[in-house]
Image 1 (cartoon, rainbow, N blue to C red):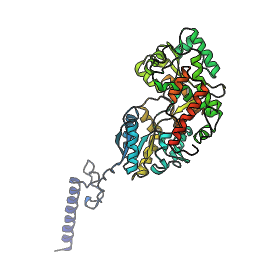
Image 2: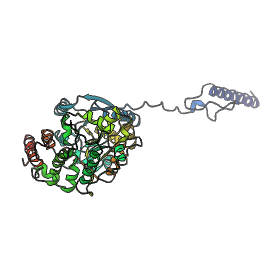
Image 3: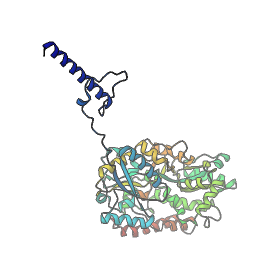
Image 4: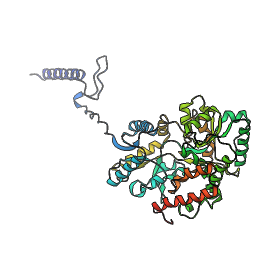
Length: 460
């Protein structure tokens, strides 16, 4: 074969090969590469030489945490709302374990801790009930976690043991003070009292107008305690060492004038006939009706009552406000706070890091927004930067400035394990004129001694 002919044959073969390869690349594009553009142009490189893209990876399996919580109230649905967001954002799934309320629930928690069967996270009381669970042995110390900069110091006191912080808050606070009918106050030209003397003057004007100045509901016996319990902010402001000394058996109600004052308040309002005539037969529910309708104007109570008012008297709840139990000094004016229950991480959990991520998310603005979507506030929140929403109850809005300005103190039961079982019955005796404030306070000091000795507290 001549040289010229050989070159012609080889060129022809090369052309056929190129066309074949080009057609092949257009009919089956390789995974991860674009098909040839319209118009018949060919890829710059044959498909057979293009590297295959990796197969898409499967999503990571979520970490599942167990959370023990009661189902009564709004904490459960609110925590469910946070959990739904946490699963999307953190890939952490919450499996809820429902516990009973009351003593049965307390016993279950103690049993689970003792047997090592506690959930990864526990939702439980703050304060003295936490201390009964031996938190240093059973729960993770959160003191140095960055997210612990978010809760207010007044809250952290209630979940602290031996200088270590163990809990993060669930929901809003709840204060003890004087609920009042704003509409009647306006009609009578009254202003919120800053001192006990001003409170008495307001009560005189209300009584003179033919209305019940102070609602008593002693048929529901625990309601007899509110002047003493709500006065604790005033005690703490005047005697900063009272909690520590009281717990150590170094301070007494009967011998601490600021603490005795709550007993004297209970007596004085009875002596001045401010109560409704049938206050011994009046229940909590009836008292709320009187307050909502304006037949009774002031009611020593916890702000958890605002929820009940909203449910039963939705068109009246806007008329209800709250102010602190007044002291004798206008410069001492603040709320005694009942702190929310808390989330605690089980020290024996196998998923401590994931549990920390969950509670960190809970404290974030996004987590708090999810929580609030299912739980309306009975008081301001105890997380920095989280304000009560615009649609909050009027009474709740009244409290916010006190929290913003640090004019709050936890109720005694959150910072001391010492509380006698007979306070309500002793105060009914005071509030009906059967016993003097001094004698009643001395009786209560004896009552708490029995309980402190049962708890084996030092100094008792």
